Length: 249
Length: 244
Image (cartoon, rainbow over all chains, first blue to last red):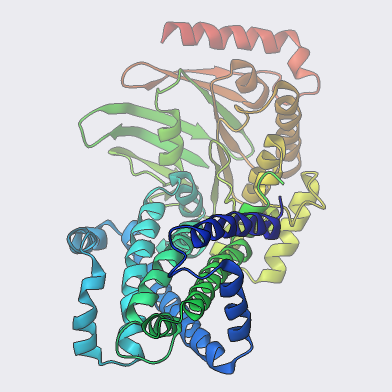
C-alpha cells in the first residue's frame, strides 16, 4: 500500500474510535472529530496559526540540525578512536539515563527564556540518541573495509572520509528519525512555559479557554509537524544513503 | 623482487601462528600458497603487504623494507572488501583517490581497467547490484588500476560458483600474461594453486611453517589444466599437504 493510503487508513481508524468516544462517555469534553477537523481547517486559514506552526517547526529544525552537527561527528570519532571513547564513555554512560527534560529550569536559568533554552533542550535529548547510535554503528563497521583503505596506503583521515563517515550515516539518520517523536514531545513541553509562540502554547492556551475544538486543531498541527519531520528525515536519509536504497533493487 | 625472511607472528596472548617463514618471488613469477584452514595464510599475506607487523623477521620489496602498506603492493582481500557506498568506478579508483591522483585521471584509468574486466557500463552501479563474479572483477580492477609492482590475493575465488571461478582464474592468468605483474595467491584449493602458481608453497604445522615448495612445470602454457603435468603437480601438492 502506498504511504498516503496507509496514513489515510490509520486516520480513518482513529476517527472511528474517536467518534465512538465522543458519542459515549467523553461527550462532555471531547468534540466530535468532524468539529475538530472543521476547527483545524479554520485555523489553517489563519496567519496566526501558521505563525505558531512556523515557530514550532523552526525550533524542531534548529534542534535537529544542532544535535546532528555536534553528536554525529562526535559519535564517529568516539567509535573510531578508542582513547577518546575511553575518556568520554563514562560521561555518556552516567548521564545518558538521566531524564534530560528535568534540566529545563536550569536551561531557562542559564540561557534565559528565549529560543536558545528551548532549542538547546530538544537538541540535548536528540544528541544523546544520535551520539550513542552513531558510536555503536562505527564500532560495528566491518574491519574488512578499514583493511581495504589501509592496504591502499590510506591514513585515518582517508578511513574517516571513505569508510567511517559513510558507514555511520545510516545509523545517525535512524537515530535522528526515531528522535523526531521525542523531539515533538519535548517541543510541546518547552512551549508550555514562558512563551506565546508555538503549537505547544496554542494547545495549552486553547485548553485554558476550554476551546477543545481549537485545542485539537493544535494537536493536529503538532502531529502533522511530527509526521513531516519523520518523513523529511527519511527523505534525507534516502538521498544521503542512495547505495542502501539500491540494495536488492 | 619480494623477499620474506624468517617471518614469525606471535599474538599478544602468546600464541605463535607462523614461525620462520621464508619466501621469495621474482619479477614476472607467481606463487600460490596452500595450507589447511586457520594455518595463518591470511596473516602471512597481511605481513607481506605491511598491514600486520611481524613479531620477527622482515619483508622487502626490491630491497626496500615493507613496514607499512604501500601503493606498490595491492591486496585483494577475502570477500573483496568493496565499499558498498561507493560506485563500481569509485571502488576501482579508490587506490588512486587515496594517492591524491586528480579525478579525471583516476576515472580514466579505472574505466580502462574496468572495461578490460568486462565491466564497461556498470561504472555507476553499487556493489550490491553486482554478482559475486562481478564484484571480484571490481576488486581485481581496483588492484590493477593502482599499477602495483606486486599483487596479493586472499582466497579470491572461494565464494564463487564453479563456472565463474574458472572464468575468473583464466581472466587473472590472462591479465598476468599481459601485464607481467607478479602475484601471490593464497588458496585452499589445490587445483587453483596448480593452475595459477608457477610455484606452490605448502604450509602446515603448529605453528605453521613453509613445509615445501613444489615447482609447477607447464604453468601458464595453453591447456595446462588438462595436461598430465597438471595432475602430477596436484598429486605432489596433495602428498605434501598430507605430510604437514
